[in-house]
Image (cartoon, rainbow, N blue to C red; front, side, top):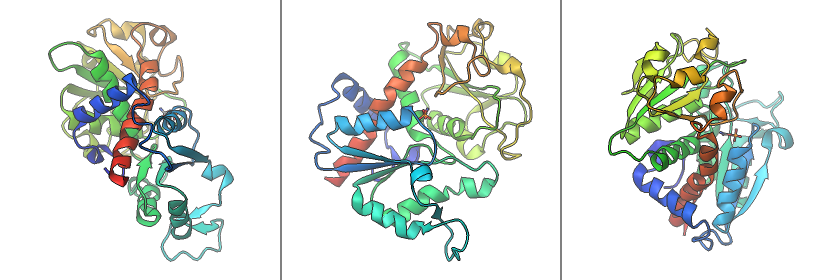
Length: 318
Ligand code: CP
C-alpha cells in the first residue's frame, strides 16, 4: 500500500482486520518499524478521534507525529492550475506540498466538502493534489467524499463482536440532524460493506437522501426504516445531507431518531455511530447509554485501524 484514500487501497479486508487485531493484543510489537520516520497530520477541520488515534498509532510504531492545523495556522492554499493569485489564497499547492513531502515520510490529511459544489467536492481536489505534488504516501483522515479509516474501524468492530456462523444483517440508518452534514461516512461505510461482502447490507433513509450509487451499488435501499430494522444485527446510525440536491436538507423527520422502541424489532442489534453524536437528535440517550451501544468500542478501535494502515505503508517504504 502506498496511499490510503479508500477501500480500493487496502487489499484483503479480512487480512487487514487480522493485522489490526494483532496490534490490539500487542500495540508495541512493531515499535521499531517507524523509527526515524516522521508523519505529518494536516487538519482543515476539527477532530478528536481521528487526530488522537492516528497520533497514538504512529507513536506505537515508533514514529514522530507532527500535527498542523493548516486551516487555522497555515497560509490559505490555492489549488487551481494557472490561477492568478490576486485573491485571498497565498500559497499554491504546487509550492506547499513538495515542501511537506520533504519534511515528512507520510502525510495524512483531513478535509471536509464545501457541500456547495458537488463536482468540486466529488473530484477530491485537495487529496489528489497532495498525491500529485507531495511525492510521499498520503493517508486520508476523512476527505470530501469518504472516511476510510472510520470504515475500516467499523469492519474491525463488527468482526470483533459478531460471533455467529452466518452473515450479519447490517443496516445503515439515516438520522435527523440540525444542519447539513457531508455524505462521507455513509458513502464510505457503504463502499466498505459492499466490498467486504460478508453481510446482508441495507441502507434506510427517507426519499431524497439517496447516496452516490458509485458507493452504494449492491446495497438494498429502504425508505421504510421500521421494516428495514427487522432482524438487524447492527444498526449504523448516521445523518447525511442530500446528494442529488447537493448539500440540502429535505426532511428532518424526528421519527428517524433511533430510540429503544426501534430496537425492539431487531435481532438484539448492536448500535454504531462514528461520533461525535448529537444526543437525542440522532440517537436517544437510552440507546447510547445502553449495552446495545458499541460506539466507544468503535472509537477505541480507531487506533488499531490506523496502526495497521500506517504499518502497511511503512513496510513499503522500508
Ligand atoms: N469519527 C471521527 O472522525 O471523529 P473525529 O471527527 O473526532 O475525528
